Every structure is written in structure tokens, then in C-alpha cells.
Length: 104
Image (cartoon, rainbow, N blue to C red; front, side):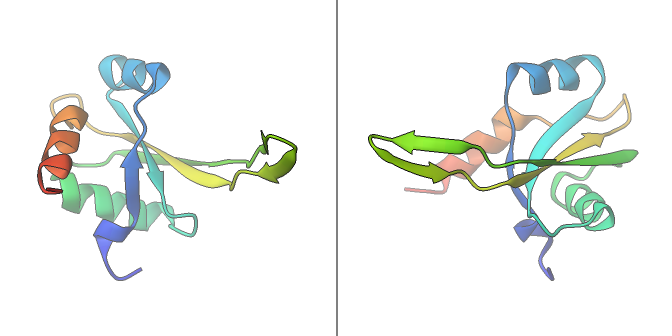
């Protein structure tokens, strides 16, 4: 994993993650499955320019999926919950608008 931009896949924007970012200044991201906590911390600091106080990771297990009569399974993925200082912030909505603006 030489490139820090390959570690962060996407931000997770759910009701719970929005509440975490508003109340506790924690942000949730989907990250590469084999990324370590120091690699995730370095990637967040480089991409967003904020200080990272704590990184918690979680493996979300794959679940069965059915389409018609065929059964399959969704892949497991890794989630990182990032704690940043109260005086700093990450604007997720500005991040998504700049990403989609480049895809014309």
C-alpha cells in the first residue's frame, strides 16, 4: 500500500455516522481490508489535513444475498471510525461534490 489515496475507499454516510460526526467528532470510512491502523491514520491526515486522535477498526461480515432463485454472498469489508480534535472538522458533503465534479 504505497499510495495513501488507495487506503480510503469511501465515507460511510448513515444516520449513526452522521450522529457520531455531529456529537462526538468521529467520522466513519470504508477502508481497504488489509489496511492497518497506522496506515489509516496516515491516510486520513494526508488526505483531509486533520490530526487523528484515535482509530478504531471493525470487520463487517458478509451476509447472504438472494437474487431470484440463486443464492450468493456479499463480501466482508473493513470499517474505520476516526476520532479527530473538537476544533477540527471534515466536511463529507463537500468531499462528495468535488469527487463527482471531476467525473464528466
